Structure formats: structure tokens, C-alpha cells
Length: 383
Image (cartoon, rainbow, N blue to C red; front, side, top):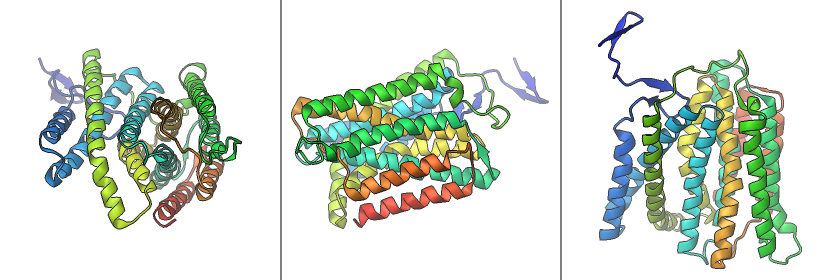
């Protein structure tokens, strides 16, 4: 039977497009590419096991990896739209963090002696990419489109407070303890830092989703959130299953490509810390595009929920995971940043407090954050 809507005929089984501020439109039925890319990822993984990771296979793995990342975030968006805000952005942040943590752990286990600082480099890169790159791009793009945008000041302040505590305890304090291990915590200190990270992140999630959920919802009358029906339970369940399949494929593909990336970095003679930047940029790319689309649609609150929530999840979940692996396999874990990176981190946190301290933003704040992001990239390559 045909239904009429706004003078047009539509079929009840037709795909329904649901704008959800992500990399695309969340459809009532998954588009073909959202299951083809994960399937191709598994095919490439099997070919690698059978034939080895030669040049053509490595190139195919790189293309397939990007497609699978976008497919994973699409499925996370379907699940997110089903559960609603602010749970939706939490689902996306957790999906990205699972990818990043699995990549770091897999590389650490494969080459323990050479990867003592990989977790630190990746987590720090994620913080800089999120707080300066993604946030800066969202503020600039949203300001260019809508001149001035608003958000909930209480939610941003809560996220920045937890972020300052997490980054200081995990990446600055290790340099100033009396354990005489340099940039490392002792085993007891590492366990304590992991527990504290989980407590801080868990507390933030409780405040975000239960106690003060309204702090993380769009300001009334300011942002035009699309009121569309959530996907059916069967659609959400299918996307949840495909999300798991895609995440596993992403971890396998990224682990296979890591040696190729490292050889390329050694060839151009740039610091090994760039490996962490590449890993962080890879897993944050789809979420960054999701935040950028939301800012362009005048939904800055959703952009900040995605960005700051991702930064908090990266530290609050990744550090305990790598700490557990480090203790289990007896691998040293360097967490303390050097002086240059400590200055950049302090400047980033200070700017975050200032630029997000009024509840309104313009293009100026976006430009400032993007300049700091450019400084971070430049000094990472030219230390």
C-alpha cells in the first residue's frame, strides 16, 4: 500500500533517512557499503594470513581499513540513535576508544621492548587532535555557518575538569614521582593511576547519563535537533552485531599495517612518536567528521559531546587497559611527557577553559585551537 506525505507517494518499506549528525544519514535498513566493507576487511585478513603482507595486499588493506572504520561508526550511530542522547555520543566515543585501545595493545604485545611509549604518544595525540583539531574545526566551521553558536556551559566545564585531572595524573605526574623510574610509574603507582582513571571516567559517565543528563543536551530553543523516530529494534541489533564484526576487522587490519607505517616513518626520518599520531588520527577521523557535520547543522552541543567525550574515554579506558597489559607481560610503560609536550598540554587545557567558558563561540576560538594543533603537528615532526 502506498502512503502520501506532503503530496508525494512513498512506499512503507522505503528506506527512511534519519539525520543523526554523523558521517551520513542513518537509514532504516543498513546501506550495502556498511556490511561490504567489514566483509572485505575479513577477506583481506585471510589473504594476509595465507599470502603474507606484500605491497598490493598492504595497499588493499589500507583502503579496506578506512572503509571499515566508516562502516563501524555508521553502525555505532544506528545504535546511538536507538538509545538517544547523550547515550548516543557515548556509544560513538566508546566504539572509537575500543578500536584505539585494541590497536595499542596489539602493537605492544607484538613488540614489547620497542613500544614503551606508544600508549603515551597515542593518547597524547588523541587529546591534541580532539581538543585542538576537532574542536577547533567544529568551532570554525560552525561559526562560519551560523556566526555564533551556543552550548551547555555546565557540561563543557564538567568534561574539561575531568580531562585536566586525567591528563595531569597519567601524563605529567609520572615525571615527578620519587620512584626513580624516569617517565614511568612503579607497579603500585601504575595500578593506582589505572584505578583513579576508571573512577574519574565512570563518575563522568554517571553525571552525563544519569545525575545531570540535562547538562549535555542541546540548549532549549538554540539548536534545531532533528526529531526523527529511532530505528527499529531489529535494525539496531543488526548494526550492533555488524559493529563488533567491523571492530575486530579494524584491529586486525591496523595491526597488519603497523610495520608498513613504521618503515615509512623510518624512511622519511621523522620521530617514532608520529606513529601514535597516525593511529590516533585514523581512529578519530570518522568521529571528527561526525562532529564537524553536527557543528555545520548548528548542533554544537552534539559536537562537543562527541569530541570531549572521546578524549575522556581515550584516557579513562586506554590507560587502565595498557597498564593491565604492561603489568601482565612485564613490559615497561612510559607515560610521562617531555617538557615540550607538557607545555602544549597545559596550553590546550587553558585555552579549553577560556574558549568554552562562556557558553557561546565564534570563529575566533576555532582559529586559535587550530593554530595550536598546527604547532603540535609541526613540533612532532620537527622536534
